Image 1 (cartoon, one colour):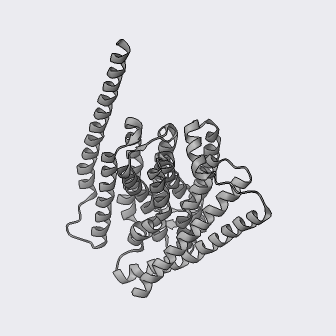
Image 2 (image 1 turned 90 degrees about the horizontal axis):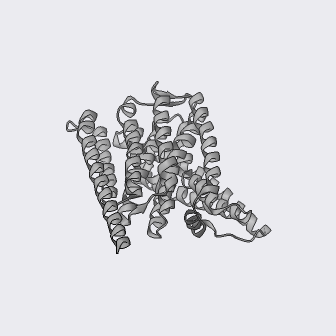
Image 3 (image 1 turned 90 degrees about the vertical axis):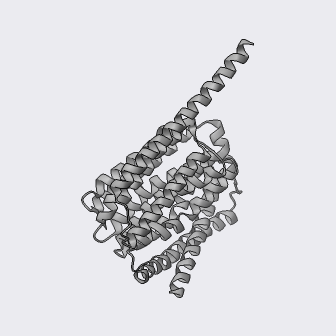
Length: 370
């Protein structure tokens, strides 16, 4: 068991190093050829930080381990919103850009609902994968088209993060190509070790590959998103922090699941417990971003704490389910208990925000009269 854990950790480290080299090489190469920092951040970096999920899911899908593939994607999406945005907004409140409120968050919800519709028959087949990949191409085109209409503040924020431009010399070009090639190689290598060790850990612990995918694999492959979002939040680059989490979730569903469905011999099989609980949780997470983003155009520390607490509850549920505990609450209890709590909390946040705006407006009017 010790050797298996060490193999898992080694595979995870190799994955993260590979993702870092891939992002560094591709972003600098793009910058050298005149690609804007905003485009680099929204596409190359977003895909690069999702590369561990891609590598692990493809390896698992090609090996016929669909539970691990699905668990990795669903677990990462739940983790990205509830844990990463929860933690980063608890560090410092995150201001939400208009594009995220009006476009990206609704797109994430729409893609989440589409994924549920595609897997209701219990299998994500090749045709489903082709649909998801086609929509990914449309989304990337849409994101690139929107870059020209972004505000100067957003463009400046991305420029400060991704404008590290190198001279377009043969030496620099070859160096960055080498980074990309080595990064891709490490991703393949690390994913092999991670998947093999994850399957062994599941067998030793007597739990399903789905549980391992939803928890430790999902958290491990999301480490690049954690680093990117937390560092961005500490620097006050809130658009990057939120955009990275939301963009990665969209890419996970359209890209990672899409490719996995195409390479899997029999498609990605979907367990009944995923249909009954994990997929609804993912949709709930995507849905709850809309009112939270819309209220006051930011995620406050209290709202971040609410998101974080939901992730803890979700992990507890997954663990109890794996242990087949008699104290396992039903999904009906979750819906009837947590849905009203969420609704009341959002109403309180909305009322507080409205009162703050009214107070600010009154102060402006009073100062104008004076």
